[in-house]
Image (cartoon, rainbow, N blue to C red; front, side, top):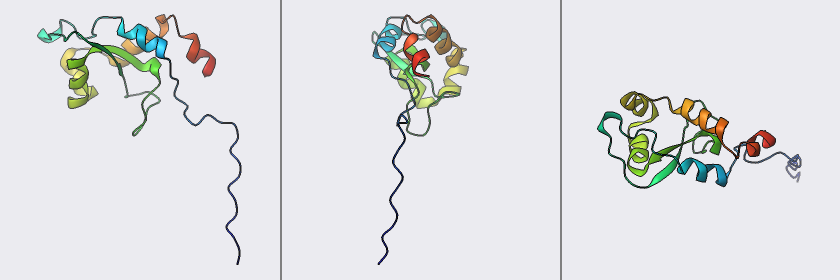
Length: 117
């Protein structure tokens, strides 16, 4: 009987190409909600770091890198997931990716993903 051949050993490639940075997420949560005051949105108290999925390194069941996070109150974050990113952006007149990119550019922790990439 012939055995199946063995898989070649994995090269030292990262299993998860997305960058994780707890410090950046904490910094993002320190901002006000990105939709505060828009379309009469009443923010809840808790600010969360909401990951933008459209046009990022996320995928099906894969959270994007932390550098693609924006501050949303818990109510807005739930709405983002409930109605979808595009509808959320249209409703509030924002560009989530642009906000995330600007926050990432200004983050005091940006060296983390600049080094990892």
